[in-house]
Length: 166
Image (cartoon, rainbow, N blue to C red; front, top):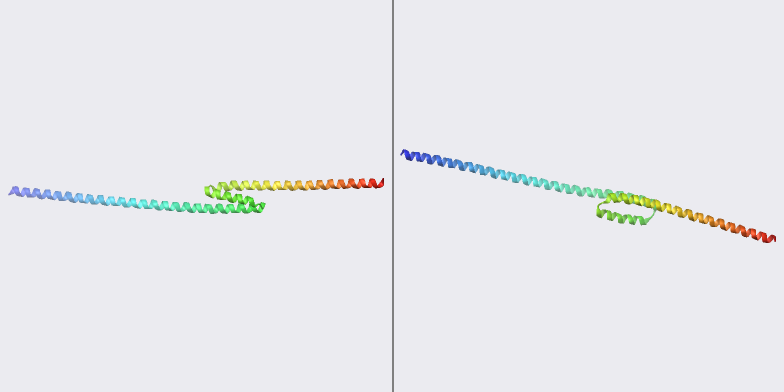
């Protein structure tokens, strides 16, 4: 009977240990599942934050490009108005419009705009100088022709006077 009791006690202790082990493993498994879920939730939140940051960055980039484009268009419009007022030459604006389209396509707008503005200013100055030189040449030629005509008239008058005396 003692033997049976000892065996029963051992069996109860063994069963108790097994139950304890099962509870321990159950708790460990639950902890692992919770930790895994927590890690997945954290990763999902991180991913969402990164995606939101990327969206915000893209939005800012688009807004920046738009503002830059508007600013560049404003600068170009001012440049065009000044050039038109200075020269009154329409052909240069067609060139600038074409250059503007190319610049917007290449998105290298700002540097091209500065270069084009400088070149147009120099071209305008060159045109103005050429016009002034041509105008001076015409005036000088006319004055020279007038002097020659007067000299010729004076010679004819003198010749006529001399002939009338003879």
